[in-house]
Image 1 (spheres, rainbow, N blue to C red):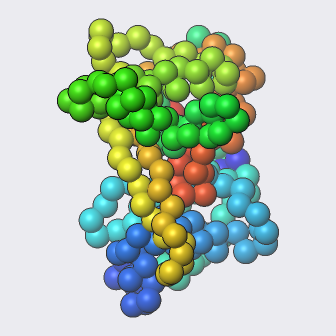
Image 2 (cartoon, rainbow, N blue to C red):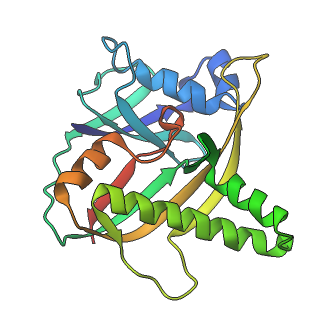
Image 3 (tube, rainbow, N blue to C red):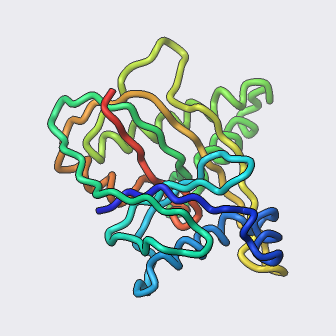
Amino acid sequence: MFLSRITLDLARLPPVMLDKWLSEQQAYASHQWLWQLFPEEQERRYLFRQEPSVSQGVFYLLSEKRPQQQHNLFQIATKPYEPQLVKGMRLFFSLRANPVVTRQGKRSDVMMDAKFHAKRQGVPPSEWRALQEQAAQRWLQEQGDRHGFRLMPLAEDFTHVVSFQSQRLLRRDGEKPITFSTVDYAGYLTVTEPKLFLPALHAGLGKSKALGCGLLMIKRG
């Protein structure tokens, strides 16, 4: 595996591409542009996440193959990704995820699902955000149970949720927009099963991976 830091110089974008970058097509366009770094790949085999930047597009990308190192739009820095994991290891993590829940065979966005049930139960709107954060926290805890890690406890009433927002994007003009929620998580975790945790790092967590979600970033804490 390879981890790359990729910088898109917005000043070098042709007008048509810049229009997409400044529109609701940005996430889908970013995915397509990054795919150009793997000219021989017919299927997406990478995870990526966009970082905040005013003047540039900055991405982290995790891939099975080393991406092309020369491109007229990108500056690319790549290194092998070979995390050495042991049981009990403490790591700092950050994750942007699209968490979902399945009820009666139907997949729903965790954040919207929590809001729907709060409204149905007559919970005041002032309490919805807290319930959504709790739902997002439960989802991440469940991911840990399945994928070999445990979230390190926080003070009472605190979660690992940094922020969340609704996303609305287009793939092409004239198409119905895609809507979903993203949650940014951060904090500390403990590796409980390295053989389960490593595949989760490679494959990512949650849905909407083609739209910049799922990449679990870690470092020794």
